[in-house]
Image (cartoon, rainbow, N blue to C red; front, top):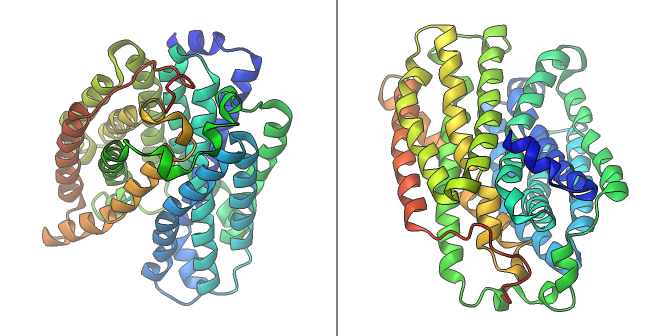
Amino acid sequence: MPLLSSLRALNHEQRHTVLASFLGWTLDAFDYFLLTFVIVGVAHEFHTDNEAVTYGLFLTLAARPLGALIFGRLADRYGRRPILMLDVVLFSLFELATAFSTSLAMLLVLRCLFGVAMGGEWGIGASLAMESIPPKSRGVVSGLLQSGYPCGFFLAALANWLLVGTIGWRGLFVVGALPALLVLYIRRKVPESPVWQAGQHGLGRTDVWQAMRGHCKLFAYMVVLMCAFNAFSHGSQDMYHTFEEVNLHLPTGSGAAFLLVALLNLGALAGGLFFGAWSEKVGRRRAMIVAALLAIPVIPLWMHGGSLPLLGLGAFLIQAMVQGAWGVIPSHLNELSPDAVRGTLPGFAYQLGNLLAAGTATAQTWLAHRHGGDFAFAMSLWLAVVAVALAALVWLGPEARGVGFGQSGS
């Protein structure tokens, strides 16, 4: 299997680096998604409505570009490893503090601060991993890293299903502080990026704007591309719980609802690994285009399967394609980025694109309400249009598969 052979090609330290980066993104996503499962409970305790609590999700997303810029620049200047440890500690502390919120206002402020820390993790973890492994392993490792996001989603769903009835929503956020223990593993087992070490006397201290001279068009393209990618993933995920409740009439927390979410995330894991590895053979752009376009014929099964087994198959396949395209992104963005700003640029472009796509759920809700509350129609139309737009953007853009890091002189 490509995954096993690629991992076997890594030495002991490289495997630890990949594992730490994967766990960082998994646990970051776990902490983010916990709030999505307890919105009703939080609203009840603070005597407000669900919509007011959802501002916590918006503030987290809105703060992520700031975190990507701050922590990315720190990582370019002081190294990937120490800043990754700092970032993990901070998002874990803000998660823990959320458990002790005394008002909705306090909770919203803490979720905003959590968003700053969350915004820094992806870019630093991805650059640390990509700079530490052989070029031929980037595709497989890229898919593995991006699969951390659906893994975190699944773990949050599992924790909510098993624990919320016993420890409540505050207890879930206490559990969400456990990622801080990852720092001990990074400190003991994970070395600094060799590419950053080689350039720390020059590239690592270059001003971000100076380093970006001649690359502004590339940066703008990456932001637009990531806007499309985030509209693609959020368009298939964020309103899925609402679709289950409104269109499928499955109660929140029911076994059937959890099964569909589990299949959705298993599909995401399989797709990310497959297309990430495949991109090493056929190229980054071709793998992303194929995955995006293959999502379109799966849409009817995903939204209109008619039975639980068929809906489950549709959920699995749609996320295999959506996250399959996403599985190529860590390697693709890092390969396109200049050496001097690799800690900053991929994560900053990703999070700015995420900010631009933050209205996805609102747009889908508006579409659904215009069609009698039919979320199946809104989500189907959205995903089909975005899939075509995404494929076109990828086709028009550049590719740098296998480029040597630390050799560009950028």
